[in-house]
Amino acid sequence: MAPAAERHIGALRRGVVELAVLGLLADEPRYGQKIVDDLSQTPALAVPAGTVYPLVSRLLKDGLIESSWQESPVGPPRKYYRLTVNGTATLAAMNSAWRQLRGALDQILQESS
Amino acid sequence: MIRTLDELTPQARDAAVRWLDGALARLDPELRTDVRDELTGALCTNVDATATPPEVVAVLDDLGPLTDPGYPDPGHPGCDQAQDPWVGSFAGIPYDWRRPSTARIKDRLWDPTNEHLIVPGAFGAGWDLNFAALAIRLGIIEPDAEDVPFTQTPAAAFAAAKVLPVGLAAAVIAHYLVRRRELPSQLPHHWAWDGTPDRWVGKRVAAVTDVGLAIGAAGAAIAWGRPTATGPSHAGALATSAAVATAAAGVTVWRSATPGARWWAGPALALGVVGAAGATLLGLALAGRRAEQQADLRDAR
Image (cartoon, rainbow over all chains, first blue to last red; front, side, top):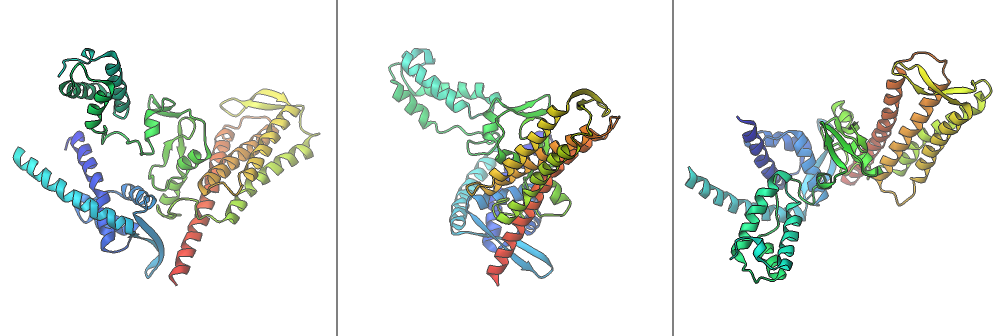
């Protein structure tokens, strides 16, 4: 794949990872590595930990998620992330915007193909 | 509809140019000419030659704020750098000539969310070592060990971090007091690439310089401990103090050593300075992580 194409696809992926992370945390609280692992199970959303951790940090700073350490049955304590009330509302708004975007884009791309 | 902005009144034209200059500053410089042409065309389509400045601005405002997904937005941490002439890179070497701040020093030396070990320097030309990335690679901390680094670090840890600069300052003072008679009247103050002294200065000047630097670092470490200091800026200040005090102590030792070629002395001094800052930040971060973890686990029980 051409470098320019890779760059644009990377930018596209990074744009939706925020929504994906909020969606995962709406399902259940997760720790950092679990978020990375769960995203990587879907190749289209696979992003490195170096992308996920800054994103999580920004979501924390924006008050969309909160964290707490919890004991782990298989190792040292882990830091779990969960949605805040503000995060839940933001996820709903982003979800709605995403559906509209997806519909509009599908229509444009079908017309151009 | 008009064909060019020159058909507008001078006042309306100036208003349009000011609006365009302000809006285009937020775009990648390479895109500005094309986007300016497009915006000018859209404006010309929607105004006539008698348009007043407010009417021109209203038409431009209707076009919406300019945003470029490939360029930092105004809220992005890198945006000030992208538009600041004092920050950039030359021949691939990053530079930052803004007045250094303890918060920026902390951000560059300790950024767990950045996986890169080498990052643009906090001040001057060159790079800094991101100790947090190093600690993560060595398995000492996790990338998300603290929500916001150093905000949970207890006061006792900050107090303990002052021991290094204060102790080094005391050692430098003691060195010159104890050895003042046996030291030669001239001490080196510059060394060749192989570590051989090539310029000399009087003993008194050398002592005043080293002691002054060490006391300054120790004093700053103590003064920065005021209650209003935030955790991150406090950590950056203590790391800076540790680095400066280590430099003063290292130079004191190097000056007083028997003259001779020591090619390793310069790199060792640089390593010591960087290591002192890194060790300070690592200790504070580990203390903060432990405090955050203990508080959460206590609440969960």
